[in-house]
Length: 380
Image (cartoon, rainbow, N blue to C red; front, side, top):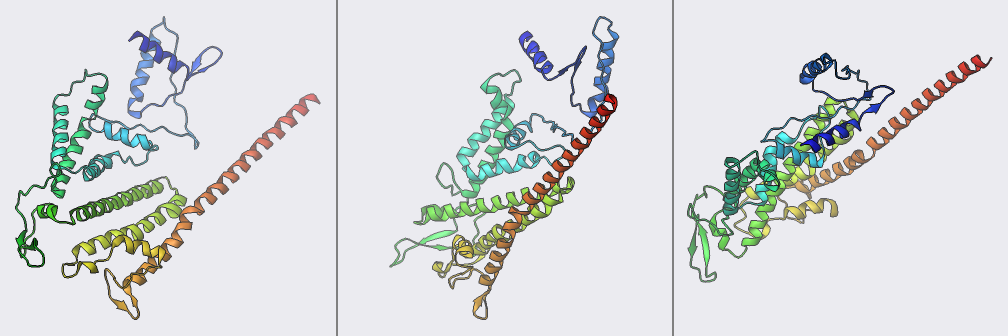
């Protein structure tokens, strides 16, 4: 404890400025703690044996960069550490940690969805919460500090496992199945769906016994990941736009945020819409007619929006498919938005920086002219 105290003293003294007969240091203080620190300094000055100290408020200017103070507790600490790893929010900027409390464990659950593994992690989180001891040290201390993060990751993994109907890579027929085996001459093990049967939650366990199990389940998981990933990115762009409005950064708002939101919505948001359209369409009569969403999206740029006579939605408008015309509109919009996102803001920022540096040079030159004229006056 003694060495820690001495080390902190020297670290903080090295941040101060040594004047002729005193040491000057500047610190940031929370407004709610300002009166408390003033009282501490008054108490220090009452002791005549101590060196007198003063505590004064410094005026801020337009160039002052305020540090960000984000209070955390035992629940939010781990999530704030994740956000700070990528970048600490600026002063008065929206802190994404509070949204990350839900989105991070949920997206982890989409990746790690398994009833068995998720339940194990969930029970580990419960144990860490119940057995937490503030006196823990070393690696165990960091594990205990992240106990709420582990708890939520385990819960969402357990939940996603029910959606995937995956228990240690084995399906659980808890609610039975909506399919029955039918003996067929041409197809030995054909199955038939019960009329108007809807599986209560998640994936029907019968899908784990078909030949195209891997392609079907992987496709479902990929599409779910894409849907939630696009929603997360759109939400991030919205937060960025709100920050630009708060800081009155209209260059970033009109040259970055709005074009990014339109680009994401028109291209990747449209991809999510196609996924829902494909899911809600009955392709049982001829599965070969079901077009690939990825191929349709890639053809927007590679083949000028061609749908190869297999439109996912809409009919014909003359000789062209309505979907093909919409794809050409998407392509035209993206081609316009890309240069808007790339070029205007750097050019505007460069012009502002050049104008600012020119103004500073003029101020320096005017100061030098004043000094020269004064010195000449004294020489005369």
